[in-house]
Image (cartoon, rainbow, N blue to C red; front, side, top):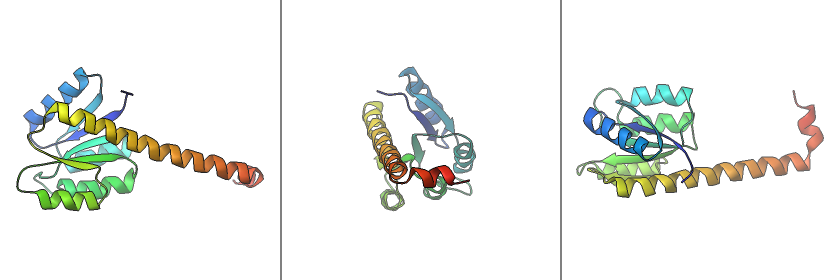
Length: 149
C-alpha cells in the first residue's frame, strides 16, 4: 500500500490514541485530534489523504459540521465517518456532504484499513484526472499559459 497521510478525529481519547498507534504500527502516517475544531486547524496547515472522523463529538462542532468545513478547505480529501448505532441518519447526511463512507463503531482494523486504501485510491484517481486535464489545457494553448502573470 502506498504511503498516505491520515488524520483521526475522535473525542474518546483511549480510542483515538489506540487507533493512531495501531495505524502507525502498520506504517501508516497517522495523527490524531480530539475535536472538529482541532481537525480544521490541522487541515488548514497540512494536506491529508484520508480523515477518519467520529460523527458524535461534544462541543461546538460535530463530525458533520467538521466534514462540511473540511471539504471547503481540502475538497479532494476522503473522509470516513465513524458512527454509533443511533446516528445512521447523520451518516447519510455525511454521505450527501461528500464523505467517502461510514462505518459503525466499534470498528475492526481489518475492516478499516481496506476502506482507507479504497478512499486513498479514489483521491489519487481524482488528482490524476485533474493533472491530465491541466496537461491537456497546456497542450492546447501553451502561449496563453506562458503569458499569464
